[in-house]
Length: 294
Ligand code: G1P
Image 1 (spheres, protein in one colour):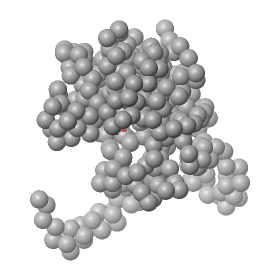
Image 2 (cartoon, rainbow, N blue to C red):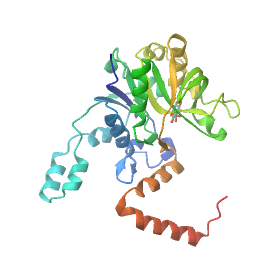
Image 3 (cartoon, protein in one colour):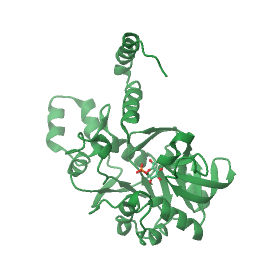
Image 4 (cartoon, rainbow, N blue to C red):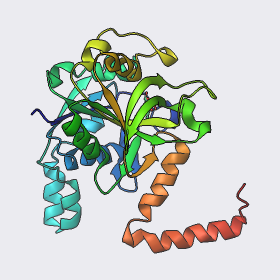
């Protein structure tokens, strides 16, 4: 059986929501505490058993390549100063090979995934989006790969969102459920408010059979004038079963400012050395501002 060993991480977006910070720096390099967001994604892929990652980059994304490269001078310097703990953090994992390809024009997520088609070839593969960081006992991508291994079908990671949020996501219209796994009759990208067929939203984790490329090849323009991955999934679902899987774990939205700040606070609270001083600081703020939560 072919299992999932390759993953695509699209990272070609312009990062408009974080301007001016992202004018000269990729949004994927913005740190949550002390790690760039894209490193959390790469680490999840490795923990899920992925061996080859291709990052789809665009203009101005060089620092991503530098980040995942060896840094011999820095490593030497840390070694000489016996800063071994930090050295461990900057050393790159040898369990994975990271490759890069450029998306030449920002034509949307579907197009970014299509750019990696020759790297994937005729194998099942994963896609992880950098705006969603997930903390889970079993990594969210591993949960999807387990589903793939049982069904040999494409599996799309979903979680429930509120009615006021459905318009920001790809939404699935489930026809039948079996535990956390759903059969799906339709996949809709960013339905207008009030028109979503359910509250199950696509959360940036996918496992695909290679047949998805046939539909990405059509390069049909969808919502927002972009080539949408969700539209290709909808078409794939007409020739093969595509399941949605409501994965376990807490998902953090680092693709917009408030979510980014909340994630930073929650992740900082997970660092033993930061937890107490941060809690003190937060309670001081709440007290001083006498915040009235609406
Ligand atoms: C993309 C996908 C959407 C998905 C979302 C998850 O949208 O097109 O289907 O629900 O990621 O974060 P974007 O956030 O890039 O607009």
